[in-house]
Image 1 (cartoon, rainbow over the protein chains, first blue to last red):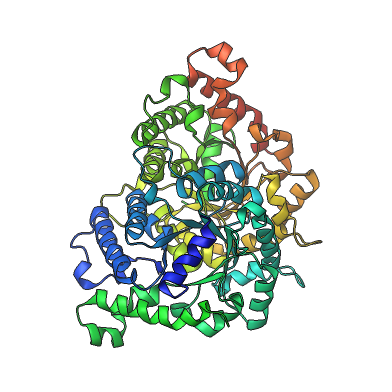
Image 2 (cartoon, chains in turn orange, blue; image 1 turned 135 degrees about the horizontal axis):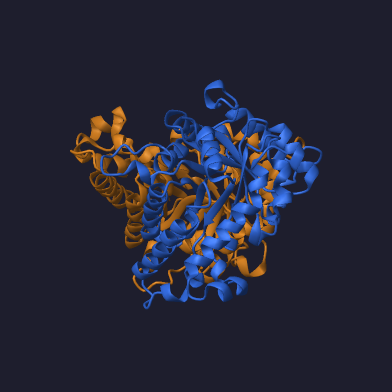
Length: 306
Length: 306
């Protein structure tokens, strides 16, 4: 089954297009999980325990998690090993997994990155469950940087989200370049072209080539949605980064399909907010589950026909 | 000591601005190193043995190696562990090391990528020698994507090369966008600005913020050199990708400083070329060493005043 269909079915099953982002930082873990010693092994163990519990806490409420490879690479190869195990753990709990890797290199190297992050493993001792269902990508080196991932997606029913409009306002100095046709619109047109082939589209006309599109002003959001009718959107910036469900609405198709919304810090560190801390005390998992449920409920109407 | 000075001293010591790129692919290894079984452990061991020998073969001839993380990530976390060990192995053999990671993400994530790839480790059990002297980066999410690496470089005497003009012609659909001021010139101006602070420049006026700049037509090469007077260039595309030393000349400063040239496949797989195979027989290391020496000699004049 194609990725866009799998994603839409998972959204329907949970009743919400909410995705929880797994961005673990050692200093922000609950006090009970802080390692006693400053070794890499202790740090990775603490991060992994935290993430496994977060995954279990949010699994009943959302269709997917986005696991950010950068936060694991901060802990070197041992951290990346935990990343792959956590992809497997999320799969065990019935979640779709987006590997947030933002890789982008020339074609000969992109082929290798695709092998590590989206292709079904060619080694008997690497579990297929450790590979995510989709990856985030940088398409700034052109189609060749994305093509190996498209081939992997076509062969396996996986997908991808290519950066088109990042959430960080600091990215505007690049993405607003170009005058009347800003750079992000150029990238949008490329992503539309790369993903527009009959065998890449599902029955609802959605492609395995999606886009990362942050919510900005309503007019440009609606323009992007219209310009990319076949492209599933992954919308960052909700919650800690300040965007509301209403801000995200123009990025959904009229039938409520074609987009998912990610929240990371506002959910996984909910236990450190005073309101949650007071209600849940030491039960940090309860605070995370409640924040995931709140988030899922808040954005649920966007996933229904408007 | 600042990175640009360390790089220039290493170039002077070896008498050449040649850098060998380590891009290992299992299928291309010498027959003697092909693993007997199709397990991940056997693949990583074969790749690592090959790369250690390549590093030792080229170390007498060049000032630096560029190790491409993508080729190791194809072998998952175990591959990345080998990447870090190989950075350490190259350091043991007196080489500067460029970690070819092409990472680029929003500021909050870039901070974590910098921790994993350029900052001196904060854990007692992670050897500082496993961290490269410089990293390649994607700056397409703006200054915030690069700033954590600049801070790491400032604090440690390390450096970086930000993508400005990639070697893959397929990247032109992005980098030639924008009409009279193409996108790559916009990225060039940003990189110049990010690296232009008094405490980032060395005594020769070269910044710790370099750029990846492929050789294209002579006129635009000379323009980029003039537009980025403080920026060290890492030039891809020599050898297997078809560019000659003469093509690269306009990217050097008049005194021969400010640029390095990378060759990967033409050196590390030299043993599979008929001419080398005939001369060296089963001595694949000898073929690699000879190719490195040829490459080093071919581009050596570029590193001298013109």
